[in-house]
Length: 112
Ligand code: 5GP
Image (cartoon, rainbow, N blue to C red):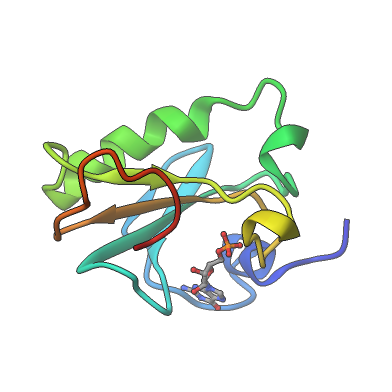
């Protein structure tokens, strides 16, 4: 797999402020936030897409911990874009935590 920007952040080649780190993942602020809180949970393992991550659920569990640490555990939205057709632009699996603003009830997709 070719190295992505997130692979370089995980390896430390590109510096980033880490909001959270454990053995499985890191969390950083999104460079182009779509909500007052927009954090990316990035597994250290360079899995390209969710469908490539058969047994790698640790990062999903870590998202709850990150949300707690951010103080948004009561209400946050967790998004994974899988594939270019769904809006994935960085092919190193990552979870978006969005919080700090309202989300329309029943509204499913996207960052709106
Ligand atoms: P995707 O569209 O792949 O689900 O999400 C990629 C996300 O990564 C986008 O929300 C974009 O703003 C964010 N992003 C892209 N490049 C960088 C970067 O260099 N640093 C950070 N912190 N976020 C980035």
